[in-house]
Amino acid sequence: MGFFSSPPPAPPAPEAAALPFLEGFIAFSIIVWAFEFYLDVRQRRQLGIKEVPGRLQGVISAAEFEAARQYSIDKLSFKMLEDSVGTFKTIGG
Image 1 (cartoon, helix red, strand yellow):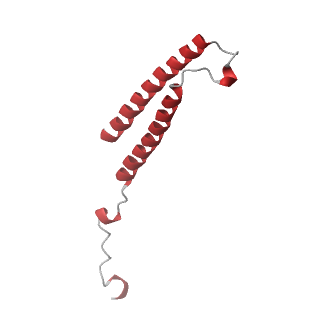
Image 2 (image 1 turned 60 degrees about the vertical axis):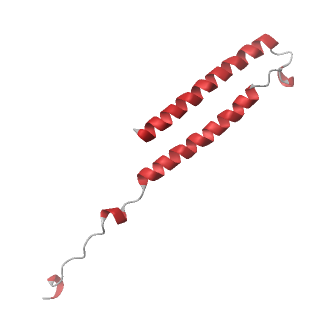
Image 3 (image 1 turned 120 degrees about the vertical axis):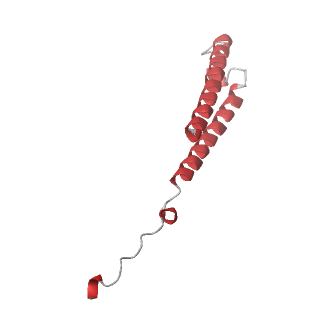
């Protein structure tokens, strides 16, 4: 009989051969979000300093600096919220 005498080997079970792509995607998304969130928190802490830095004294007035600082805080706060909602919406949906 020779070549056709035995049945072909069974393919591996799909569960055993599948790589955890979904779990990897979720883990990577959370790690990236957490790192960016950490950097944003550090940036907000720096934006809490109210005095004009030495390099900017004489270049920008205190009122302009305060307006720019408040704008940056608001913009960063919205970004943090938007990133958080977007990441968890992607993971959950």
